[in-house]
Each structure stands twice: as C-alpha cells, then as structure tokens.
Length: 267
Length: 230
Image 1 (tube, chains in turn brown, green):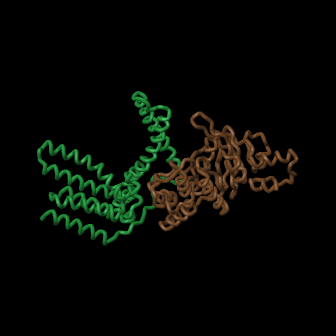
Image 2 (cartoon, each protein chain N blue to C red; image 1 turned 60 degrees about the vertical axis):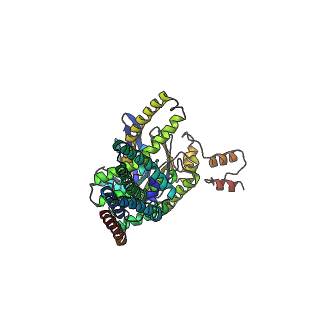
Image 3 (cartoon, rainbow over the protein chains, first blue to last red; image 1 turned 45 degrees about the horizontal axis):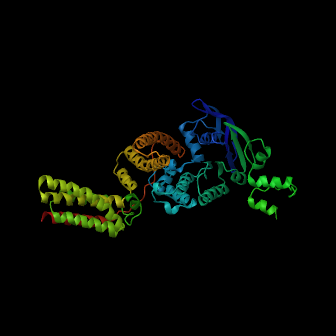
C-alpha cells in the first residue's frame, strides 16, 4: 500500500532518518515505537508527503510519489494524519467548519461535505459539539474534533502521532474505539506510541525505531522475542514468560496478548 | 466572556445579517437622534431583546452594563464639569449607552464566525476574511499559552517583586513570539496534510432569512425615527 525505500532526512545538519525502508500493508494496524527523538514523527510526516526525503523514495500503491501538486493531492487523499497536539490542528472558529475543511478541499458537493461532516462527528461521538466554538472545547474534545477532521476525508490510511498521549481514560478508550471501527472497515492504521502494553495488544505489526533507523519490524511477538531492541516487554508477556520459566504454567504456544487472556491461562 | 453566550443563546440560529442589521440600524439611530426618549427606548429595546429573546442571564448582562457604565459615566461627568453643560453631558451619556447596548446585543448573540461568514458573502476579499478568522482563533490559542507560561513562571517566583516581574514579563513576551512562529509552522503542516492549497474553504452554516424578523426590525427602526422627529 505504502512503501518507504531507503529514505533519509535531515533537519539542517541533524540526521533524523537514515536509510529507512518499511512496507505498510493494507488493512493492518502498525504500532511505531521508539524513544523521543528516534525519528517517529519525521517518518510519519513522510507518509503523506509533508516532508520530502533527501534521498530514497516513497511509493503509494506501487507508484512513486513525485511531489508535484497532483501527486501530493492524491497521496493526501489516501493518507490522513492526526497530529499530536489538536490545538494547532484546529484553525476554525467552530467544530463543523473545521471538520469541513478537508472535504471542501477534495472538491466535493455541498451535500457530500455535509454528510461527511455529520458522519465523522457521529463516528467520533461529538455530534452535539457541531456548532460549538473550538476554543471552548476540552483537550479531549479537541482531540476528537481533530480526528473527525481527518476521518471526514475518508482516507484509506490514517497516521496517528501519539493519539492517546495526555488523554484521560474515557477519551483514550473513545479514540481507540474510533480507530478499531475504522480498521474493521479496512482502514490501515499507523500509530506512534510510548505505551508498550497498548502496542502489544493493539498492533498487527510493530516497527521499532532507534536513532533514525528501523531497529525492527514484525509481529509483536517477533519483536519482543528478539530481546535486543532496548524496549521493555509488555507486562502481560513478561508475567507469562516468568510463570513459564518458574514452571507455574505450561507453554502451550498460546502466548496471551490481553490481560484477560493471561488471567484465563491462570484459571 | 461574552463569547460563550454568542455560541449558545436563543438567537444563535437567527440569520447574522438580520442581527447585524438590527444592531447597526439602531446604533445609527442612537448616534443621530436628538431625542432623549429615543435613546431611552433603544436602551430598553436592546435590553428586552437580549434578556427575553436571546435569553442571556440578567446578571451577566447587568455586569457587562455596569462595567460600561463606569466608563461612560466618568466620561460624561468630565464633559459636564468642563463645559458646565449638564444637558449636553446627559445626552452624551445616554447616547453612548444606547450605542453600547446595540453593540452588546451583537457580541452576545452573534459569534465571530458568523460575522466572518457574512463578510465572505458580501465579497470581502478571501484573504482578509481568512486573516480575521485565523487571528480570532489564535487569540485564544495564545491566551492559553501565555496563561500557562505565566503560571509556570509564577510557580518559580517569576512575579515575586517588581524586578522579577519585569524580567519574567519580558521572557513571556519573547517566548510567545517564538511560539507564534513555531505554531504557524505546525498549523501549515497540519493544513497541508488536509489538502490545503492556499485557500481556507470551509462549510458555512446555513441560515434561513426570516421575512418576519426583517419586517419587525424595519418597523422598530421606522417607529424610532418617527418618534425622534416629532
């Protein structure tokens, strides 16, 4: 679906990405892990052409992204980005206006824009905030409004830059629910996060970045069985492995991903 | 903040053009009219509309009015003292108050976004509308940032004493300035990723024009003009 081949990027003289190659497959959920400054955001901004690699190439559905206006429009129609700070993503006075911005740029009819605004506000559970002023929303509500603005463009791929950072439990669950539903409908997701427990149970694939390079790509189990990626193990996996090594549990090959699965193993 | 009511009052769905027409026509009348009765009527009509039609809490309206009262009263008292023209000063007092009532009606019932959409409709250049819209939005963003910075500074004794206060204030202003550029950069990135190509087009709220409202406003205007010329 989207492929990065050997991309390198520098901020002035600081290398942010070096020789990053990743193939994003359709319909999967990717978790992007790595310490602050590992290059996660820089990588994500390459996925919809906001940043242009100094060397290397990005492919969208097999065609190379050429960075002329037409290619960028197509790419951004495909790939939506939810930024970390909703405050800067919202620019309009009211929620409905802001959400309508993307669909308007797609050149859709007024009825279609209206439908998409309503649908995406409903999908985010904030329809009642439609005519509210953006500056009176809470942080969680701003986040949901920013997400609605991206969903309204109906992209096939959504890039999420630390979408749950700084949210309370309720908004965290709301945000994750929205994206699970989208994924069930075939939307590919790429989420950067520092929450290893969440990444472990949520992701189909994990990408680990370190110092601007890809340190590992694979299923969560593959990643954590490597053990040399300097990221700590998710608590469920850690406890499971400890129980097996102590002989308290029999290794039947069914490694639990969720807390409930581990608890069930314990009987 | 009157802003809060502008987005949630009983006249929110009335066409902004009608509210602008109502506010500005009555304001014009109160600026021109030489009848005290007309000025009083404008004040009463505006108060009635704000309280009973827009359903703004009386306490809030009273608070806004009383803060205006201090300014207007001191101003006209100075004139009365300077010119010894008590009658003239009274006129200025009520004229100012009537005009303020008209203005308050507008800001309490009509959010800035609606006023921008009217400007767009009467073909004010898109660049100006967009600039106004962004400025308006970022007033709140920067108010929030400056508030947070100030809190952070205070918690480290930034405003303890005059010398510290000057220094902290200087840092606050310069950091806001830097933040502004950074913020603009991020905003541009965010807009681009939603397909921004140079014009901020958004869906405008649909409003229904009401012949009854326009007729009522016109009748009020005519009656006031008539009352003023008698």
